[in-house]
Length: 330
Image (cartoon, rainbow, N blue to C red; front, side, top):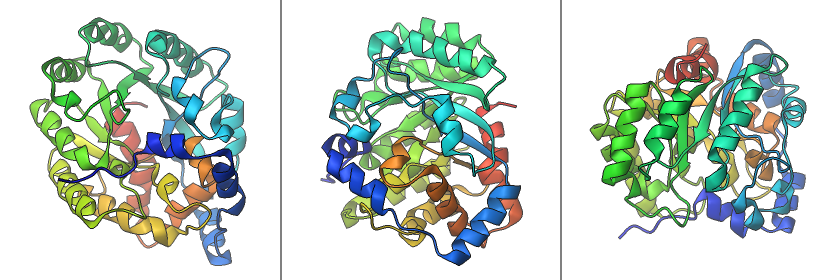
């Protein structure tokens, strides 16, 4: 039986303040050649960030933060994001839900719709949180589908209270089909050993667009060979489906603390990009979670380094064009 590797949420919960601090202080620097390439690329490549987390703890309650590293246990606002990305050519952003308390889903959705409506920031749309395993989700989805700023929904499937196979339950599948009818996407954020369940779900809902977050949450170091094989097979099966895309994001958080380079991230990212193809991949910043091991700029530049030998058209699709097409935003 395949044992699931430490998932991203567990990773955050088991990290101490000292761990987070060491990550932030000792993140490796790019070489001069890498920096030169990245600087030239970021100046001409407009980026659509499809995974922009923000949280204002004066407005929203995020229960999972209690067990997260101390560096995440404060508010991260749009103004902070703009500072973090000031040296990266961010053209547009799509907000990604932050797993707020169950009774605050609507409060979160209303809050970020307000941000998207404003003209003082790059946010153009939002992927809101939701509970598709509950029958009440249908009314919730219909309500927010009416907003031109809501393009999709996510439910973090690797939380302890969301067991393996939950996404294949009857109510969940029915609500996924509804999303397709409403023109909304669904982001699959799940344990790497359970990507196969995501494939089964997507096959039952061919009219719904699914996006696998964070390269399927497969860690870049310290994994069991059996898990790698299972993940690769499931990702290949997912890539065969027209309605499944892959988000190149989050992977830097799984690297060894304070001791990673672009080469450490490259194998899994290249596998995902080659497997899904240049038309079904999108970039995601995963800020501020990425700050546990890299600044936003370091993460973006590492990815630019990995794709430096690919075509200009490939990079344009990865960082910009595919996001607009897959999430249906402009």
